[in-house]
Length: 178
Image 1: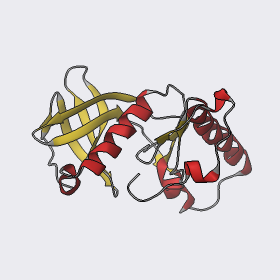
Image 2: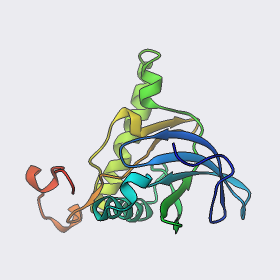
Image 3: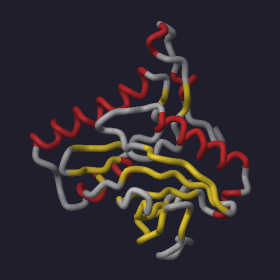
């Protein structure tokens, strides 16, 4: 992780690293204007100069900003400073479904509750023409208020399903670089 505690991106002050993946580094931060805790996702420096990575990052911002749903992480802001592109999202307390499953199986009532929440979120996205192509336990946060989908980095705009157009598997398949 490349940003140190105390680093500022606009009005956001980095507090601590939360994790990293192939397309981003994630930090807990403080919004100094509103005095609230937020999550910052930054495009890593080794990817920041590639147009493909920046396009994916921008696509993620557009996809998440188009969605308002209780089980999808909320995007608050986007920015760029000194060559660092970043997304500001709500800070979620809890653990990923992946981390929770490492502790053992979930009780049936919890599986059913979260299953409905998890299924409802991509349904909302699909109805708005956004195909969520990276649904996995590591991209689902379990919080006190329920499950939340994270990381729309591989999301892709498609023809809204409400138009009556049928999407084929080939039309929604993930290919390298898209």
